[in-house]
Length: 311
Image: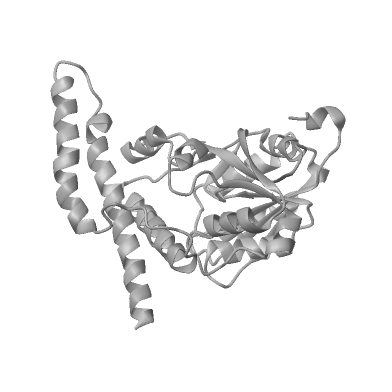
């Protein structure tokens, strides 16, 4: 990888941040973006509020004096917000991050360095846990849920997730914007990119952001349900995506899971009965089942809606 700071060939980058009710994390996010070691006159920060009502807007407005552009998107959906940011971006490259993330100080420098590699048009950054405190946050940290290594073991392989991704702006001019109707808009765009763009995607493991993972089981359920819905929705749109769930029914999975995860739990308990073992480790099989159940409920809900529309 070329060292951007050495050759002084600065790429102008637009950072796009969609915001919806993120008053706890958005200030930390923006401060980390203002504190980048990349030259400040070679990047801009565009924040797009998507209808926050928790006080986030007041926090965003405080940063206008620091040169942060604050826009408002009326249409609900993070991809509608991102599209508005992209349309207003001046950069040759676009760096995407979520408002519940904190960027490492050299994040932009690392992304810019990878763009100097031949043929690279998209970058998949590295997402790590932000100060995990709760049992569920630590669970997701252990699973490394948002890493490219984790994604590579899934049905779609590696792709840039919008919590930490970057694209050349011309990609959007070539293949279109994010599809605002999809829950998993980043995946839909990545699949389109693979088929239509003349560039390639590259990993950027040294471009790191820290994401606040789900705090509790309720938030984890909502997240996994949304992902399940989004994947099934995308499958209905793209016929090349084949079904990959061996047990799509959440109720059948529940029966099978009680035996399977129960066995894993008992095996771990017996193996470590005389050792000190954290509650989180023993609870992992049950959280796994909770997560997979939520995904399947979202998946089957999207499938039912599609079947109703076809009648």
